[in-house]
Length: 346
Image: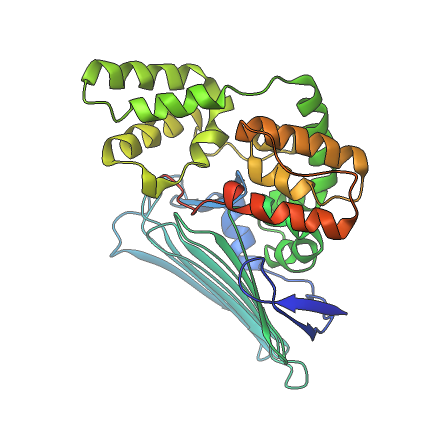
């Protein structure tokens, strides 16, 4: 088996890569805390959201107060979990270790989290690490005996569409049984089928009008800013992917403030992913349609090219019927248009 190594999705070197499978993970104490409602984890638009409550539904309290549980399954296995803060300032730490493997999870006050699994076998040392920070791509790193590989994506759904085998092998097992909705990431083909049907039945979004309304949010006149704000809200959830695709660095403070408020209104917290919800969400995501340009099925490539042109508001230089090598060349200039600098409004 060969993989191409690099950062992001631009690989520059091929090396041999071990084909280890992640063993079945047990996260007993974490599962118990989630079942009891002390900790909650949800997959929302491909990013994991964490909240915490007290054992009886009360907030844990100030950061200075910490609930800690330590358990040992014997001399060959240890398990520890601790929690500080509450729903708005969760700080969670979990670890489990035996003679073969070590597993840890941490969530900090900014809602960033990191999961790490490490093999303790000296003959086969390798590590898997998944991290997510607000406003940054989701990052997956696999370290083997030979080298490292890193994947970065705007969400776990974007990673699953581009690297389905990688997500199935490394990401889904990392969550064990404490976050069942992560297993949905293994069903991108079903989401893709729904998206193709929706794309054929739907009209092109009025992207140019939306862009004009976003620009109007920075108008000198308060009444014009308010009018643009109302008009964007009236578009409903259909406009959310467009707003999240904006380059946050190109917006001024007023635009960022108003767009953040619009997203909060149109995206209620805790709206956990389902296959149908994800299909509607990704319908207006140009990056996903760019990924689908690389699918082996000709009809999928045709629909993806049409949809991408609609979303970009311009014709694209891509021939769905061209040989694979030529299609790869044609996709490259489009990447800069569909993958702007990631800035997730919070």
